[in-house]
Length: 467
Image (cartoon, rainbow, N blue to C red; front, side, top):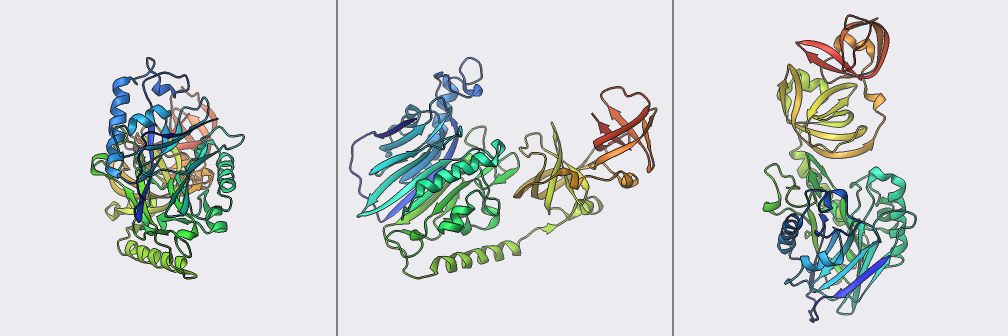
């Protein structure tokens, strides 16, 4: 394990009464030197990555950093200390903290206009992931600590995330003024890996200040997720010597890094947006229950505003019967199938195809999805524009597939859990009727049973597509 705590340029900076802080996953900030630990996409000579691409990425990341212009910025997905120093060259950020595990592609760090008083590294045991970086600051005799995190992705397993979370809880110890931030690869709400810290230590996720529709930091390929977080210890909210400045929290979306649909320009900048907020050297209010009352009031207000402009809810049947109902939200739709052009969502066993070749959903995900537009493509109704507004974890897709006895009601977008019968001249004859069968392999006549059979339209006639 390697730890770096460097003073880039010696200068004394006085703390203001307000301190602005941000966290930003820059998404793979690499140089153009091969160290052997890079991701394959960033190896010079065997990928499209070269010095020109590296410099372009550095300049665009610097553009975001300069636009943020906070006193302290925590950063994730930085290749090495040299890249981090290059990022802040000729800037007001004179202090650098950085950590990276040996042979790891990326590390994380913190840059600051204010001089830290110390730092500490916490390694997550028995997990190949990023370390947790603690950086300590002191102003006007008052200390606070920032814990920079980048948890393993959920796809690597919840147990890996739990080990990182346990390490964070241990690192917190009895810290009074603690700020937890970074990329946790975990959503806001009931499924958050941070809920134990929130519940047992009374930490507050600043997403509570925002309306539900604004709670996201990762916005790419039609999907918006709140996987970056800022949590404050209760001392910033009440009975403490430092305070959070109410209303200062925001998802930072500079116009140059956002496309026309409100998503991140991930081909040019990061696929994450930064989160920023302010704390003050003024003490927080001395009032028992102040935090819960303030946040409850703010959340009720936000929910009220959102409800006033809520979209209609609908199920898949409604979209087919009344396509004019869109925009509408399908709540707790389950992704039951993916192909190279998009995916199928199901509600009440009925499915509809969503066209999006660049989607990042996975089969089994349960989502609240806002359907903005639909179109007819090759005689089939499909979703052409959408937005994922909430995630509910994963479900067994078998609970959301169509039963073969509903063959006569089947339409494009449905997926049969299982359908059996005798195949004769390209048609499957079942107890519930017959349907054309398409397969890349030539199937001989005979008895067959097909699982996860997708219904499509071919020449105005239903057919099932089988592997």
